[in-house]
Amino acid sequence: MDNRGLLFIPDISGFTKFVNQTDISHSRLIIQELLEVLISANNSGLEVSEIEGDAILFYKYGDAPDMELLYKQVEKMFCTFHKHLMAYEFRRYCQCDACKSAIQLTLKVITHYGEFTGYTIRNFNKLIGKDVIVAHQLLKNDIDQHEYWLVTNNLVHDNTPTGLANWMIWKNSAKQTENGEVPFHYTQLSKLKSEIQPDPFPDLGIANKKKMISVSKEYDADIITMFHATGDFNYRPKWQEGVKAVEQVDHFLPRVGMSHRCVLENRSVMIYSTGYYYSPDRIEFTETDEKKMISANFILEKITENKTKFTLDIYLRKNIFMQLFFNLAMKNKMEKEFKKSLENLVPVINEVSREMANAV
Image 1 (cartoon, one colour):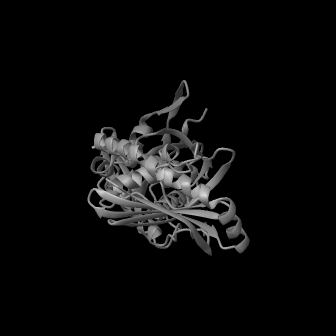
Image 2 (cartoon, one colour; image 1 turned 135 degrees about the vertical axis):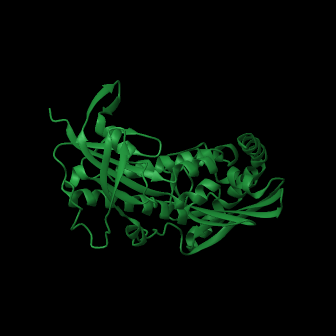
Image 3 (cartoon, rainbow, N blue to C red; image 1 turned 90 degrees about the horizontal axis):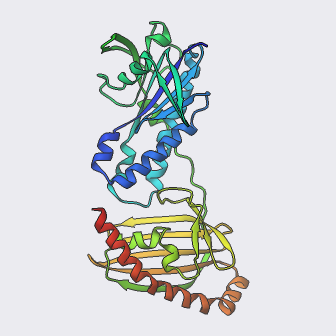
């Protein structure tokens, strides 16, 4: 069996500082999402050997790949990675240090061709060989910026890569290892990032709507604690009347566009997060059902450092017959349920406060 092949390592730059200086729970979730994004962007038949904290070791046995096809894979991963970060920066709810600084993360890619083999222990595949060590050693080099593509001479036979993109400026360097010097070429990928256009955000809200119910209550809690208590789906069944469970949440961290299934007494409804606004004194977020019939607007207003007003507004799509039916058959019952929900929030806020204090 031929044991020669490609070693391909996308590595998240800024990871150590990001994890050490930010909220550990959210930094872990952000990195987890980014690693999944990179794996999903693999469209050239690469195999995953292992995930190494902030990097993924991909490999592919066979002849050295065509450089143009290899560049397309590098471009795909780099652009998908940054497009994901841009989307999260634009749509995120959370204001913790990890979520605010995620946009500063970037990516470098190491590509090397050589000999290696693997072995399997239970469900784990592990690559071994001198060239696996070389590929990892190349992650530590003297390149100043940290969003680049590095290609060893094994892939281009000592020649500078050409004909890939006319903006590329290739430089030469070498890594000194215990097994000798490893020469390589590298080019910065910053040009790609400057040209990325975020995907347009679909309109999931209700264009024409009318407010049908509004309930509010003041709480002895700061606005961030209130935001966690009202916005975190894990707490929703504990305080919102009629909600038995929240399932199928499609993102680890809350953002505009995410969805979840709200399980009620006799049915379930798919809900989308369709709006968000943040300032230190006011937080507002909106959730809309998939049929765009009804939406809930959650408003948190800072009164003092430790006192917050919470308002829950219910809107209905403008339709005279729907509004008439709602007023006659549903309004009084729902208004009572929402007022009871606000009372249910008190012990949940206390629970959130304890959890946040223990996390410090």
